[in-house]
Image (cartoon, rainbow, N blue to C red; front, top):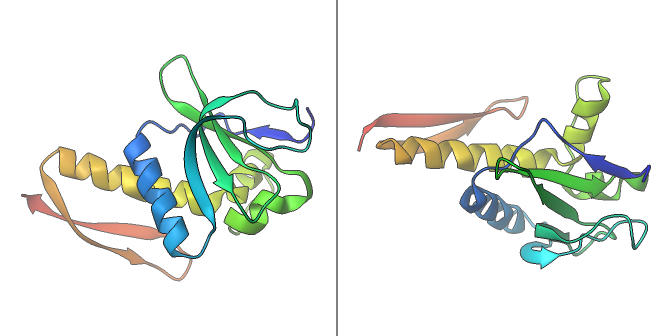
Length: 148
């Protein structure tokens, strides 16, 4: 369907990081929950099937589904019609590239996921994360210490 956006070059491989990112979105006041084995809400009822994971956006008419790929990773899929999802999770996009704009529609989620996945990867390798710093443009840097 024309409203459906699937961001193929984004892959979710760490569900624990996704859960933590969603919890942090909730702390920021975004009314959402990560649920399992549901159909994401989109403009048309038959627009998309059931997904292993769905980010339910309670203050939005649409959700974000996560389609499982052959390699076991998940790709976000959502309806970008009228910018409903973007109003909840969007961030600024510095380019006119369509793929970049689609990623920006769920930028808060993707930035939170990337941060949590990096923290999980660092701790799995024996490092400890001292904290994070965010610059004026919203870029997040992890402060990683030596082996724990």
